[in-house]
Amino acid sequence: MSTNYVYGTGRRKTAVARVRLLPGDGSIIVNGKPAADYFGGVARDGNMLLPFRVTETEGRYSASVLVAGGGVSGQVGAIRHGIARALLAAHPDARRALREAGLLTRDPRAKERKKYGLKRARKAPQYTKR
Image (tube, rainbow, N blue to C red; front, side, top):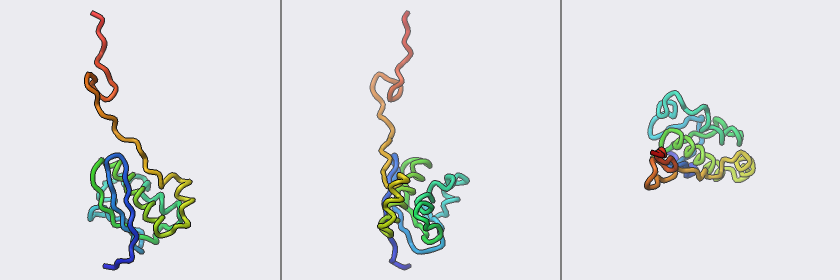
């Protein structure tokens, strides 16, 4: 296997994706399976491919991804973040386009912890007067 790849780590919620971009035909392999098979029919409306579209590099790179943690949405977001970071390493001049599309910023939103005395993070038990 060739070693001329670029690497990027993406994170979203509790998911972490390690992305390797290799020169290729645009295929994305996630945990050893094609992305469409791994995520089912939801290969997530091309959301993962957004960094390629923004930098106009569709079909020039193949991605090999190892992703762990989180759910489908978090994993897709982590992969998108990782691809954007890897593209930045390959094309430093694409920074402006990736930044304007908001692809380099790690989405800090995560699940809020549950507090004692409450049913969920903020939902309180129903108040009873009598």
